[in-house]
Image (cartoon, rainbow, N blue to C red; front, side, top):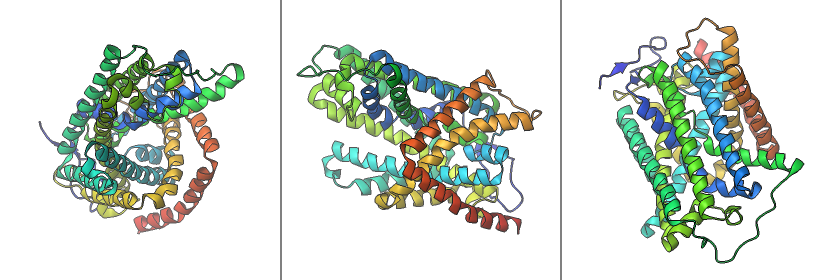
Length: 453
């Protein structure tokens, strides 16, 4: 495989080393599948079934969530090919809305990604204890070890990280395919529960709309990560063709897995038993495999989480790298090692994630507030498509969003509704997020002054 160095560089002295254009469609697919399919699909179906205890409504919610992710992909892929730079949503927000909005999006995205690494690693520690009794009670140590191990893989170079992502995502996909097949081959015998349970009432009329909205919030969170390829824009070979292929292919694969898995759940379990199940996959595995179901669920969750941990370990440093390259972070964080990894950004990201693991209780409020900014990423990206189409109509766009402006408009309306729902559902943390936003401006002003000097 030939190595092509990225020649798009910042002013002299701002960066040492270059990102390497060595990633292909397989990695683009893997980072989406690995980052999206995780604990959400193992837990959320029970919550959705509790709100929509009818098979048709239940599956419709998952289909609508997939359609939203697909509409988002169609639009964001245009931005990623128009601005093929690593860094994710920050790159789009800075170009379309200015430096300060870009700063807010970038820093919140980076911190929330570090928080995701910490959260996923802690859950890995929990399931590792279930699989290996000697590790039980050592969740924090296992989490720190897993975080350090994946950081070391990334430090070796982007190829190591990419191959790890492709391998873990393949294992994850095969594991879910095996569970789906087992459900249809061994389940559906009517012995999922010892006693029949009354089904929850199905909402009708005006009550259906709020139930659907609340269910969709959980579904859309479960689809989050459909955009993961955008964090590697300048590292993908022939980005104008391969980024849209990877993003669309990855999202369609996730939709297929989610729909098939949910059909398998309702094939094995009555809706009354699925509704409210804290771990839908665990209840299904217990019905299919009996006492071994718990072990199988723990193994499946661990494989899923390892792929997600690697994906987030790769994306976080690229956000900080992109900001530092533009003068909105520490200048040395724009350093890239010989393997194509932003090494200083990786070190800082791992350090923050480790701190969040050790002080997980202290950081809980901050992470909850950062979720507010995570929701705004969707809105900002779709808005950026409209802004840049109007302001820069002549800029080359190797890929243009299908059905624009209708598809992008529908995604924007959906994201605004999702944002309003997030604020209404967690008003306290939304206000806390606004306070963090106010505090961020002095930090931005200081960085801007240093950049000018």
